[in-house]
Length: 231
Image 1: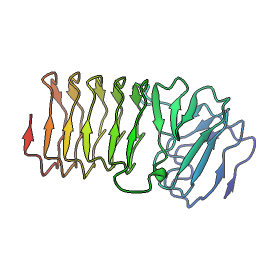
Image 2: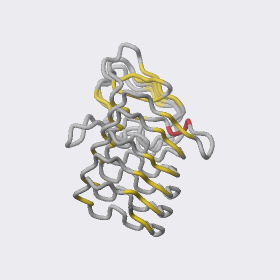
Image 3: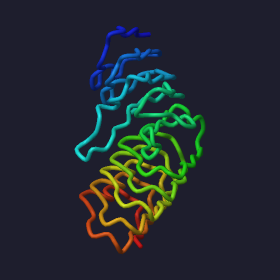
């Protein structure tokens, strides 16, 4: 267990990466939680105080949020002080306060193979690393979804992908390393497929690429050894 000083304002990037922590209390008054600050720890529960408004080291070059729960393999639950002005938790998932951005998911909450998740209507973006390493087999996306950011489902256990036609943009490596993924249907609004989007999806046999796509990035389907059909 680590007891942080009550006057602490910032826990920097990778601060406890790889430490075998089983418990930590983020003090009220803390304002910034760096990217990967608690990655690869053994923490099962995390509470976000009202003062913590800069999570996951802020945003990337596109002004998109990172996942403050990134790579916490044993994290089963996350809670947020109701007074926090920027984030909230619903059904054990971390969202922006307005519910439009899905920021993080406690990957330790998935207890068995084949589990599925239905995301609520109103979500417009799945942020960087939001489901990175999450062992989910199926995810039902809302019709409001517009954006799936970088590494959002990298290293997950998806078996099928049915992307709604509302999605307009994908991020780097967004579905890379889904070794169990066999089929994928993409949004008809996509105009580009980014670098390594489906790399190392070694079981992927077929994918439907829409006519709207004008650009396919480097290694987009790299090492997709089973890919036999692109429609």
